[in-house]
Length: 487
Ligand code: SF4
Image (cartoon, rainbow, N blue to C red; front, side):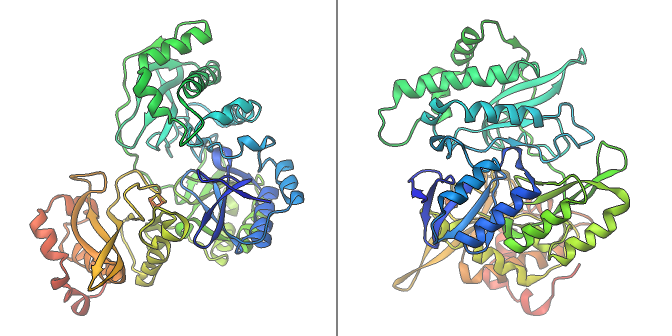
């Protein structure tokens, strides 16, 4: 059992990829128990290729499925709340929340009960299966590890008013460059009823405009057709009270912080440990051992939208031992480790739109083993849709097809910094085979030409296009022979 659906994959409905079927499990808020980890590891071994991937919505993806998932296994996953009880609701999108919900020292509202309550609502309203599977909701409780710049249809962002009252600002159609703040403030008690009413408005729109063929309308189509104000009026009508209007305050501001390594929790004596997972890939034996380690703490771990893992609730006197055990499993916790720099979408092997094998080519960079003294972000995208990361990167590689004589080969458009487009400034194209040497060249030049403590982004943003193109051209790769990457 595992039928194919040509839209977003779920668990009961996978999608076919070059390397086999791909199934996705939604993990509300990214929180997993030790028993859930064991069941996922078993599934990856029995039906997949013995590994899973953490996605940028903190889902779990099982790749290379060649052995059908049996009804018994589906039943076990349902019992553990890893699979929908109503199969038609299976492909619905994961509810996103900050991975430090409930433990972050800056938090204004603990969003974990809200995530659970909304998930219960979604799971018990089969009519919602009519909505686009891309419909997405996010809670940001005001944590330092913020998720408010993640792409979502509805974002509830915790906020303290000048009167000291705390509630949520309503953000719609959130993008990295658009906070989506529509100037509405809802209390914690009102927010679920608000989401349910807005979901009903979206359902009304979908049922009125969808003929049953082709793709279901996205939430952004609703906002474009009925406009935000008229949607909010319909919500008020359903709620039976007026929404509280406040001036739009939130500006788009891609968040900058580093959640890897050790960080104190709001609970005295406890810390969380952020663990890097190269391209979000976890072998089943690693997942089982992580589950075992959680049993000495709260028995849970958290998946993040940055394809990493947080280990919460570690007693401070156990941190040293835990770090050692994590290292023994092949993980590290440093933001300046080169593996932490890499982000890649599924690419050609896992996605029909992919022009390049992003995963293999990104992992090829690991051979550089460069020591970085500042965190870096290198984003491989198999096409311009940029599914893996919506926020600006230091270096973005966007898949293209290139001509090489009479044949077509894989290549990338290379962008740097934050200017010009969402990917940055396009400096050149490069064949997939030359990516590693170009990145090496770029890092060498950055390390030798930068001002003291200047980040890569600041470095490229302050130089002209002509200068960057001259430095990063193929003619200038004598750097490769005359210099080595240093710390
Ligand atoms: S960015 Fe393009 S290739 Fe990558 S997963 Fe999205 S659609 Fe597929």
